[in-house]
Image 1 (cartoon, rainbow, N blue to C red):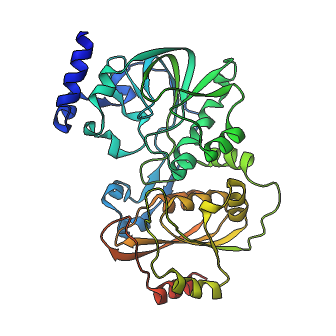
Image 2: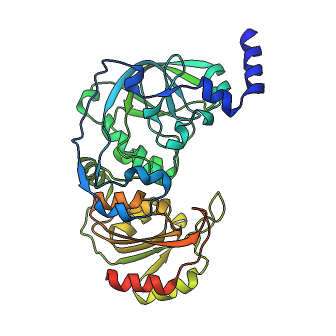
Image 3: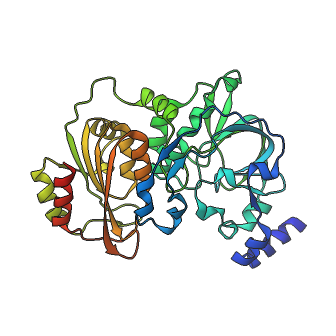
Length: 368
């Protein structure tokens, strides 16, 4: 009865300022000492001196250095921790948020969390070994670049003798998740759907870290080989496709659509480009199309994640604003692609926009 009263009271007074006081967020190393981590991925550092003169979005400014290095990549077993399906995060028993389980800086702000969810939801026990796959953001980009790479860490030899590892999901798998999990998931790892409105006390959680960082899609060479060997086509590349990704209406409406797309495509068509609407294509069709890619032009968006299936392509990314979100610059660096960008004059990163067709054509000619 007292718990019910407290829950009702907390829902009544819940506000960003109270959350900032009550929600504590910290790293695994802050909350736990002497953990035995496994580090199956060697460090990598690449030269990125050109980004010092690139107009990065303020969230990505931390990346503007002479070099880029992989974050620490590891897996570790945590005992008696709590899983929140609502946020796809791990909590300590005292409900502290483990920041390593968050893939975006936005959700490292205590004000984003519901107090009633963190502190007063029912807790159900899950015995045995569990793991998590999703993150706080789960678009197609985050599925391919943040989430699927975590399966590689679960595929390490030290976990192969465990009879079953439950891979926890807050709702049914998407088509993309199902496709890539079927290709990449170890045989002893089984997807399990849980109630997103509960919390779960997990006996043992094998926690796989993220391989990428916010705004940076760079992935390690050892993982890319593992992933591509399982997913890409077993034939020679034809390097014939010049791809222009057309953005249509999404669940969120029309975002980052090119208003003068017909004028732009008239020019691109003369250079051998074809227009593709990826939302109308199956995962298999997208993989095959990008597997044979030679050149890709598109507005910034999740569809560009498909360049992971390409080899040594040219990529021209279009932004509505005067700043760049460098996710695909870093992914291109990992894959050996040649990358260029064009910026517009809009204020919002999701604004629909017009491109300067003559400037695009000039860039296209020089890129050739």
